[in-house]
Image 1 (cartoon, rainbow, N blue to C red):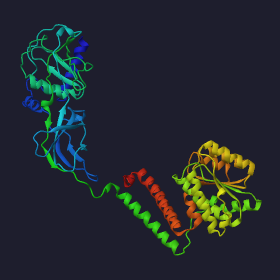
Image 2 (image 1 turned 120 degrees about the horizontal axis):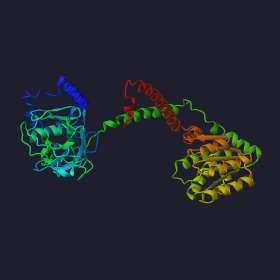
Image 3 (image 1 turned 135 degrees about the horizontal axis):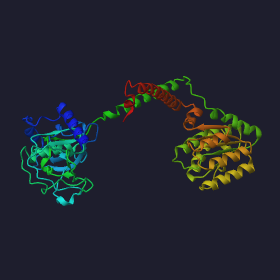
Length: 518
């Protein structure tokens, strides 16, 4: 017991030396008035409402500065949320529309129209500390103690709670609080009691029990224990609380009226406009250069350079050529790219008098492919060599189509096989069968999952965009070549931007990524 008293006296001296607790006989003159005035929450400041920029209307932006009671003393503060009210200009009452969490500094109202003008009001909403009376004997480990005569003439806040000193006895009582509740409790004490207030004793209503007992998430109960520091007695409870509710909401002045409007230009997408203009400039420039007859350098694609070689080999061997345009219909961009290449292959077979066979799995692809092959033979000066049976329909079934082509490969043993279009699981079945008969195989697809199979089993593979660039590469048409060259320049600029961005972002010189946000 002696050690305990020595420890308490030491702590008392420490608090006194740090000026955390003023002397009993010389309390601060204005502390009572100060906390009574601060019991009402202060409203947020600089509340403004404006039209949300860069949109199609129908949205207003609300901004404000935090209430001084939000984030109080570096802790969570006393504000639970901010309540937003709105009314059409000219109306009397505000309607609740939404809330914003504490620490929020802005909100959007996306439920307005472009015809009406609106006014807004913002209110800081406090945490609802509801204190209810409970029977004295329901609190465990509490013994009947003598009546308190008066409250201390001063109450001071420390980092963990409130310490009260009783005039009638040399007792110190520690009020255990949690974080942001401390300031509320101190304000509540000054609101309900003043120095010298007579208490009815321990049978008076007590503070409520722990926060685990909730009426709702917005009405928590808290228990505060006053513990004697100079005796071994357990706990004595007194009432120091009051209800905080909507009556204590701190409202701002009315902001507005404000009206929304459509923006002519979305400034957040100016970067897209700049990129489009730059890319279009290069495309148009190179198209003009190609029309003038200037030879444009295009990166060589091995698979396309080998087309003539593959057709020539079939001609020398006296065997036919298979061209497989994938398993998808004509609305697929890969199928369109495939039949475009078919036109170039068909012209070569017409010039070299080599038999061409095009099995398809879609009726619309069959009609389109026949037209392309017929045109290619006509352009080669051999329209009479065209036969409609060159392009024929097999089946829409995926694996039925693959099995039919595999059977033809094994029986007819073509010298060259082209796979150009969209392929799925049948890709490996087809490519391995073609590889087993020693045919030259040239594949092209933009299906990432099938590329490994074609790369492994075929002699040449057009990977991704190479399939789409093939028509320009083979035809040498100025518009297509200019577009292809312009896109290559755009990709080069993108790679340079990525390299510069990595360096700039790594060293933190500038938020380079913000230039590409939309």
